[in-house]
Image (cartoon, rainbow, N blue to C red; front, side, top):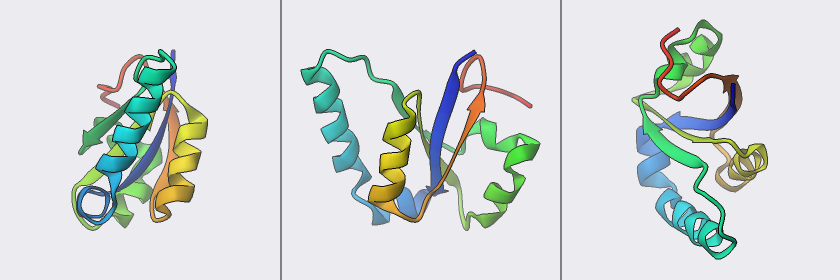
Length: 100
């Protein structure tokens, strides 16, 4: 079962106030240059946040939650440093489409 790592914030913050498109484009280009498969996704209103252990995170968000999810823990930690106002965490699941 894969361990997914995530950075989550409100949709308006992550998609409008931060240069996330540029960050992810640079990351995609880097992966292509080193022949690495894409292992991150942008998910609007992710289902995994419905799990009881993420209730406090969901309460902190002012609008629709949006997450950047990856199999790469270091990438998510780097995002936290780069963006700042995101919450990071992780979960184990067979896929990103979990229903708690």
